[in-house]
Image 1 (cartoon, rainbow, N blue to C red):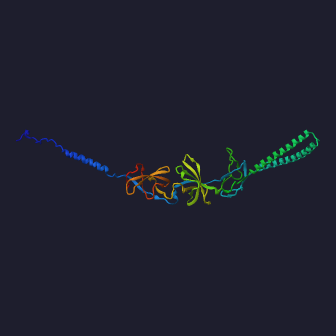
Image 2: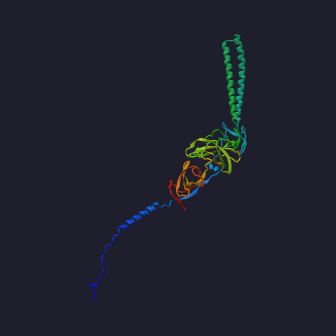
Image 3: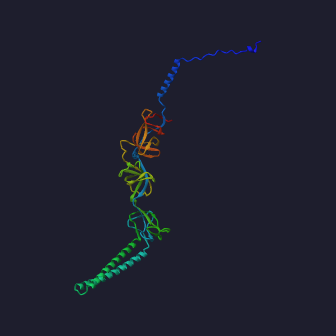
Length: 386
């Protein structure tokens, strides 16, 4: 039998590991370096971007500048009375056409008429007194020339005559004042137009200014001269350099969006609205039409301003294809047949409905990068975003 001492596990002798040959280690290092160099020179996939194409803009839109505003009347008046009084007659209604000088309303003139009669009576009395004083003074003048009366008597009569003349002047001035008050009871139309609002009725009290806590009316009716209608729009400060007095434009009313109304620029009001960053522009409406009413909303398209040259037609691109900075911007044009972008400066026009009109810098058919342009730089490599 074999004893426990005879049971042993045979172990192979330990061997020292062999070192790789030196040439093999150097070869691996060289291969790794070549791989890194090749990878560094291999084209990168590029930044993913959406690729859009610039489209030509024709017609009036090529001017590239729109503004919104309202139809306003240059001649509009709310008629009132110069004096406090009760209305006894109102001769107008809304929508009525009236002529210049037409009687719009009358006030109760019972007091003013009585004052006028009194002033006329006093003036008549003063005329009589002057006539008597003049006759006596003429007789005293002859007597004085004959040395038939004293100098004191003559001077006293001269004083009486001068006093009578003064009294007549005062009386005539009172008549003129009373007549003016009487005239103020009649309210006349200062110009021809259309009544757009009737504010007071017969029996109401009207005055130039309402008394506090009362029901006094300050206006009787509002008249608008329809021949003075024009459009006022607010243009951004960034684009106001493109608007010139006398340049052509066309107007579209919100109520009639398919109706192009010829117009022209009257003036650029020389002040800016600090809160809105805009400048007011007045637009003359060439066509006179009963459909054009005050306070209608309107959109004006300006034409022929500097920068919209015929040799360089405007193009339209999506808003996210332009980095806008005021009236200029930057786009990234994709090189023809390549995958790199070229940064170009452009002149920015109108912006509406997610699109931007570019007036200079690129041409129709140019391919542009769109999307997150903050990551792009001139010469960057891009690839279409699937």
